[in-house]
Image (tube, rainbow, N blue to C red):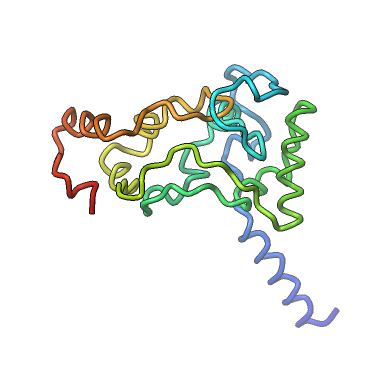
Length: 191
């Protein structure tokens, strides 16, 4: 191979390595924390929340493996929307990690297939507000801190399948604003 061929190959390798995010430290070191192991669940029908195209286990990722919310939902500090993590984030770990049980392996295979076919899953939204309400996540994270996700979303680290736990209705929001002594002016949320 010529010198320019080697340079091109190095460039491709660097681009691939930069394109796929590094796994969080606990995952990169080859395992989960010494905490409790999430049970194997084969049927999600009895769980709260909508069935998703891939059974993503928050109790495994955020609970057992202690992956911070911001690892996957990295836009929450700079955007109005927290965003659903890109498939690229998932494959960053799951190109290496294959799962420990047959049901985990089957769900991880769905991630790998979606990645190879370049067809991300069509996730079902769980927390939704009416179109006339503005909830800028970045402002709330700035005030409440990066560990405040549970304030609205509940203890997702213990949920096998995420479901909505707070009403997210106006009275619930106004109560939170009153508790924290912040503006209750209508234009804060309705603009």
